[in-house]
Length: 320
Image (cartoon, rainbow, N blue to C red; front, side, top):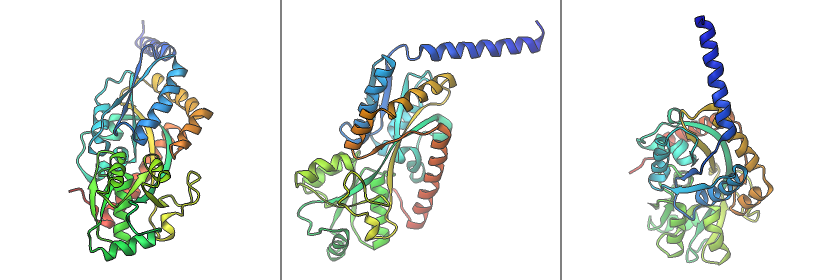
């Protein structure tokens, strides 16, 4: 056989093999890696859309939690999985965009992953312990300034939106308070309710139950506008201009996963994110279910990384 014909034949055979692979995918359970602790927003979202994906596939989606280092441990673990389509990870703004700006991580998002799609966005809610005598962000600022640096505030760890929003707040207002980092936002909220910290910029989900029970007080949201989840709360930026930080989550697969599989995965994920039940359950978690093309997701991450690189430099944000 002539060499050009042999090359063409091999290419056609490879394409046919990939197509057959995608057609039968997945042929066994698929592992979904979550980079934050059970009970938090990432975990609960993963369970919602993981179950629906499993229904689409007729296969079980197994949740595997790998929390720690503000999501970086889970991302590193996900990067090292076999690129066979049988593992993927939910990564949010922290491990996917900001952590590498603040500390040395063992993975490179562009090199080690295939970005599949954005899946959700949502603001954080600033909550305070009921003993804090503040009914608004302006009152909290006044109280914090009069407390001579005695207040403690929680974060989900370096690179998280709660960390960035907390740093933005102290930088923009001159408030002095001590950061207490946690492995996940739910742990920080629990410590706030217990009285160990005074405020936290929390994901909506872990905060809502305590707000409704009167065990935490909500002051504002970190989105640029009011949130449909809690429309009674003003944007924090009304009191502190520039205090805008929105959380987001996306799905990644290990680099080297065959394109036929990532294409099928993307199509099935889009179908899942359009499902009315998934949209409602995400809204109940305080976030909006969305989807994107891989190219749109990559461009979005680049813009977010540039935005926070600028903030980190200007505000002098550092990780101890």
